[in-house]
Amino acid sequence: MNPVTTQMHAHRSIRSYTGEAMPHAELQTAIEAAQCAATSSNIQAYCALRVTNKETLAALVGLTGGQEKVAGCGTFLVVCGDIRRHQLLAKQAGEQCIENLESFLLCAIDTSLFAQNLALAVESMGWGTCFIGGLRNDLAAVGALLSLPQGVYPFFGMCIGRPDEEPWARPRIPAPAVLFDDQYPDDASMMAMMQTYDTQMAAYYEQRGASGRRWCPQMEAFFATPRRTGDRSFYESQGACLD
Image (tube, rainbow, N blue to C red; front, side, top):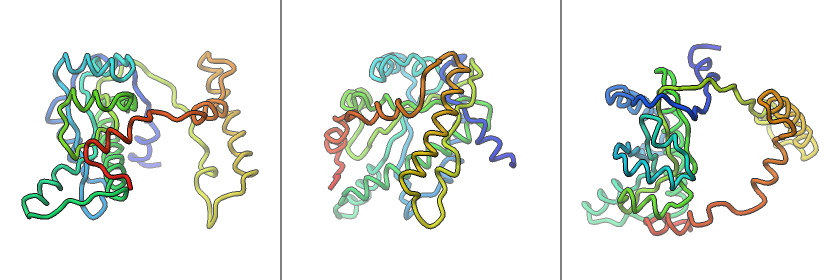
């Protein structure tokens, strides 16, 4: 372990905050550190929109499924894939900005690497974070609320603030079930590893007062039905091509 890996192991999703906002200078420092993430061909296809308007934040609470921490965390960001700047460059040069599934994936990958770097930077500065996937519950409403232009694709929100809780570390899938040599393991081996992890998670839930809860049934239920089926139509309305 070293200071970086120690910090990474200290990650917790914070859902209760004091309400203190992160000073602009600190946030800018964290953003600049996050921008050091790898980016395919240096396209840097991401941006972060800090929402400060109280009415907008209140609306986002509803759009994210009633997550009050969106308005109460202190600093809330909408993290987006961003091809807008590339579209403007193409227009200036009299060229087409041609998008396809690969360009959208590059957006999503670049944005995710940037966001994880940002969370790590922010947490190393003593702040707490929580990613908000609920931002995708109603992307059309989010896009209209924030007046997002073509080429800007909101992927998730990020709460930043001073933690007002000390949550336990949630166990992750053991490394042997993630890192493989040369080839993917056979199904029986993978299922055995998942059952071991399920037992570990059952003990974690038991300690937290959720006796009987398990990870495997959660995952079975999670993937049993399609989720947020309107995402594709919204992203395509923003100019994305998923072919």
